[in-house]
Amino acid sequence: GAVVSQHPSRVICKSGTSVKIECRSLDFQATTMFWYRQFPKKSLMLMATSNEGSKATYEQGVEKDKFLINHASLTLSTLTVTSAHPEDSSFYICSALPWTENTEAFFGQGTRLTVV
Amino acid sequence: AQSVSQHNHHVILSEAASLELGCNYSYGGTVNLFWYVQYPGQHLQLLLKYFSGDPLVKGIKGFEAEFIKSKFSFNLRKPSVQWSDTAEYFCAVRTGGYQKVTFGTGTKLQVIP
Image (cartoon, rainbow over all chains, first blue to last red; front, side):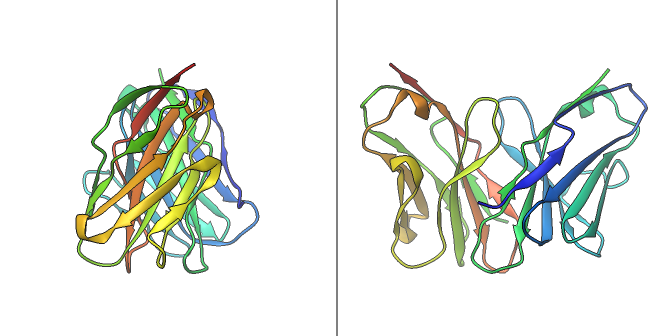
């Protein structure tokens, strides 16, 4: 199946700093990528939908200035957590949707962010 | 907006028992339906998907799901579970015309040897 690579898998950062997470589709082009946040013992919450070459669409309650999303190419989307705080500590997962019809999105392995 | 409900949050079964996990969604239009599995420490993997056609869908590892449009349901089944099926299972729906996928809250399955 198609492969989505997410990097880094784990990151620890100091409060107030910014962290960038990359999501790459390795063997297909993805016009649309999604960023999710998974809280402990809870489901995946969609944060934003990222479309190549245009601004991301954020879900209600997600601060777009805090979670900057860039989808500069058909194989790469980045999520930058700006001025991170301990409450931003979470598991972030990206998924990429191939541009062909009737196909599922493929998920990255996730990034565990810990803000200290 | 669409929503997905998974009624069972934690299921414990003995090996060889049959499994059925419930999933209901709320959306009146065309839907694509998915079941994903997340094994401990691993990323989400697709078990099976429904786009159109035969409402009984067979997936990997002996899993199947049935789309019942009148009940807005897409329950996951397996006739005989194994210890290796211990994982968290997520039902998800994508509605026609939209790309985003909405997930249910997940069901943690624990299979006891």
